[in-house]
Length: 269
Length: 269
Figure 1 (spheres, each protein chain N blue to C red):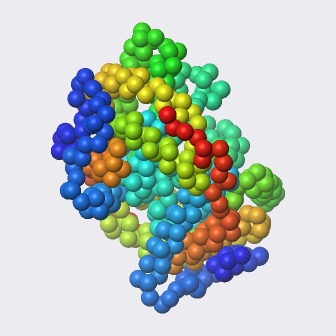
Figure 2 (figure 1 turned 180 degrees about the vertical axis):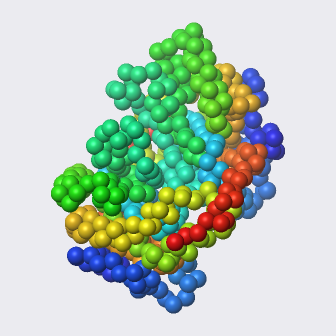
Figure 3 (figure 1 turned 90 degrees about the vertical axis):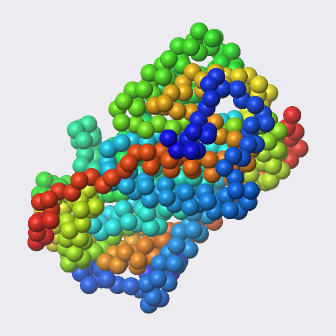
């Protein structure tokens, strides 16, 4: 296990403290140096993904969860922008459509999991289907428990059939969310990002933190690990995630598929 | 219309000459300068795509066609690697599956077209369904004609419902294909890219050129233009496509959606 993987792997049972959202354990003390380091890591991730694509064997699934404005979109850009579009797919799960609601909650998620050689990033995921209804008291503790078990079973099946799975919780503080929402409201070029629902969901902050603690604790495992990423600083957030993704790719011991000896003698007419 | 759009827009009726595959009308005469120019264009394309994403209105569909080894994968990496993965999706169409074959040939293609704010790159497309069967004499001239009409109708519908559509034919010479196939066969780290079918399809070179000329001539229009890109030089190929994509984005006069005046007064509790 790499050092960033160790550092950010969730400790059970998880306790989300506001203050931890501003931790900076990887910082060099110099923001621009940290940004340059992340850019370097992103480039190496891109190079390893080429090898992952060539290998054509395993699947890589990255789940991003976090409160509104916690930076899920920012991570996609900041950490994964060096990936060859040929092999990466980002799926943003929104409020379920009528058809989606008429299926079980894992149905739309299962359709989008990576195939061999694919890297898929879930921007929100099936975790919304235990968090949102729990916070809004549409499901009780017993139903939550059943869903945790569904999710554990589903994720174990994915891992046992060749998926490498990483789950990130972007941990921001309530104050940081306030200032990010205010920044969006003040900037006319950011109005397209505003969703007034975010302001009402914010009223349920403590419930969300509590249900995140529970959901993460219930679904963390060595095969499907959760990493809790301090995300008040965008620079530190991207640096931490890039470090963990890179360490994970290194753990995979990626290699080109074995050559075909007959090819060396094949003639092109 | 921009200068690259004018330069590479197919002239009707199209005549594919081997020699044209090596044309370099955009070159500065210095390969590394041309590469730097493409990198610059790719960055500007990335910045405009952010605006395209924010606009949340139109759809962008880019079709890449060309003989095996003509560089379709290379273009995805070379021109589109600066796009935010959040808004771009690359779809590679392979030999149809059993289920796909049991539908009409546009079925699997229609499922993958871009939604609003999405950029989708088709790595091969519905054009394979008129080229391959025509070359292999599975459909006759009358059926080809029907399919050109289907394709014209389908593409016109996409354009009339908000899609900006660009079609690129990567034009390589038979000699260049030979040396690219030989390079793959000689390099053990490229064996994963080898498909021995490519060697037999190569026997039908002249038929493919003839059917490409016909298909492109039949389906080119101002709303769904075909660009014929000299692709023997990878540098020139990427430079040409990046220039055309950028000119197309500039033509779109992209703008942030209008701000919502009430947001400036909205309070975050």
